[in-house]
Length: 495
Image (cartoon, one colour):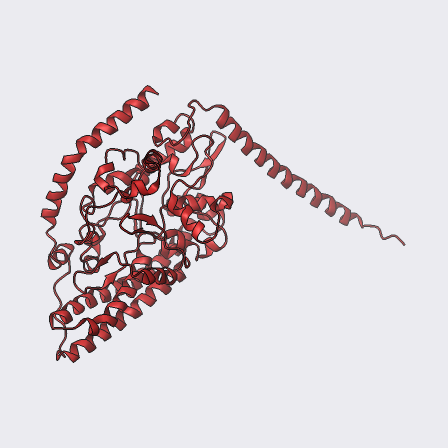
């Protein structure tokens, strides 16, 4: 006997069907609308752009909304519990870092990063540029420009190969670097598709047996950031930009890679430890966090979609998601803005507690190691101490330099910092045993390094002289940079 639906079941099925049809209609309309927007944008382009176009202003007429929001990266008004968009003198806030970088240019000057608009000006004004990074090195290589300007791909194309650019000197290309991080770094000028403009990332993928051209659109929304927000080093005398991913992307796997090469960025001035200086492994760290594991891209949080005049586009005012919680966190999370903000602050605060403890222990062990050398310690006695210091500082720097790591992957960052603290304490124990063997059983006298200036004086830095030398150096080459910038401006005006 055929079973018939009850009246209410029929109505329920009908309503459910209508809801499904309605939702599908909305999705189809959204897709159609999005395609129409794209077609409209491309049909109304006012300037034909081909090849490597490094001048960001050229894109303004074709993509006014994206360009206007990109220009807002010059805004430094956003402030959060831990900085924001401002340039903060980090060494003044945490003088222990001067000791950690003794013998390296970061001990002279280290400020928190600002928006992409400042990429070139901040680099030129820093005391770290225009001089060797470490005493035993020559002038800085041109490789230092790679992440700062779309003029770099232009110059590499002009020179014919990346190695031709890398082996040059930093000052030699100063007149060519006139456009800060912008459109061509991430987009193909002809169609604005996302693309990889830096060879190092593509080459790292190839060495891992992967083809970056197979990346999905969502993956590309992170990979364009990974062109720069990654750990890297300058390989060999050619200073070839290289990502140390051959063995994996974790802090331990990269350490093994460097250890096998017997590579060090510099020898510490106090402890004589061979130090690895981390750059900014934000991409690698983010992959280990819950958002990265769930497929959330960098652009989802740092370049959220924005609607204006019936058009939906990515907000190119790249900044902290905390500055726009309604368009970032609350897209997925239903908690209030204040609750979400405090959740972030809680994770940052906990990580920073561990970070501060590690910085203090590391600064102390560098000074203790210096004291041991002065007491007559031998290379054999200090070998284990130096290895522990190297391991500890690598973990500290990896976590600190990862740009937002305490939120991107709080568990991984605290694990790394915890392991770094463990090695710092082991290093202090090891150096105390060396001192006992040398007949010293008292505490090691500690200098006053309570301010940046006192710490810099202790490690032998004369910052007034450094500043004067930098000013003299810049004055010798800035006129050429200004000439080039004015020439670029005239070209733009003619267009």
